[in-house]
Length: 150
Image 1 (cartoon, rainbow, N blue to C red):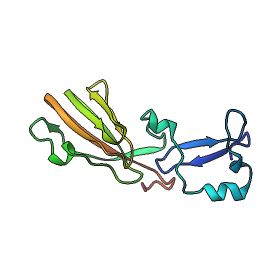
Image 2: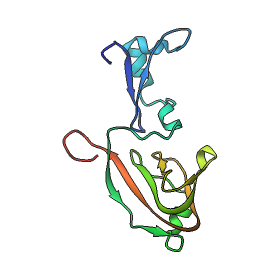
Image 3: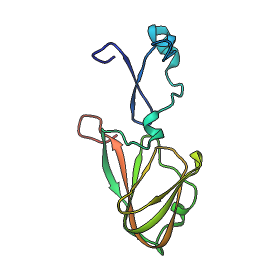
Image 4: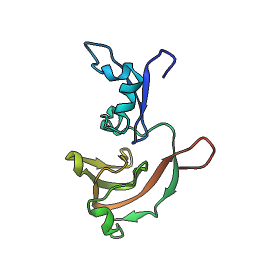
């Protein structure tokens, strides 16, 4: 619960989201009782921040790939693949352009040095270089407040 008495859900993607029952705008009567909230644990809840490809604020970089170019891009990145649960990634283009396809959402983005790509955990995606390119992928996880990454 936040300081205003509104319940907050901790989503599997790493984001936090308010869950309010405020008719007619929000119809969530289950949030009013402990039993109702308990029954909803583990059920999917749409994440508006993932819809905007926003990375959670409390994730930290823990690994970075080697730099790739149009000739050294691993075939595994060109094919449909995903990150593990709780793992976010950022596709950072140094030079050139890359097509980033989020296949599960039927979305396509053109990445450049000014426009990196954010990868949502467990979301199927692929990449394809457009001509000469240099890029790397950086991976992020939530810190468990004890200084160790989970």
